[in-house]
Image (cartoon, rainbow, N blue to C red; front, top):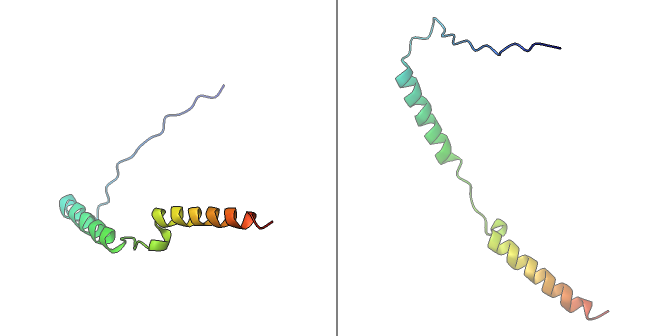
Length: 70
């Protein structure tokens, strides 16, 4: 039977890191906000759920009418 070892976690801080953590955190937050604003999804009427439902209903109605001509 194998004895499993507990995973170890190391908190290593590099010696060359001279920036303060607060400024680094604020910089990351500002970059994240910029990224969120630039990646807003452009909504299209063709991909809206309402359009998809209306298209499905129109397709079913067309199928119903065309099945009467058989």
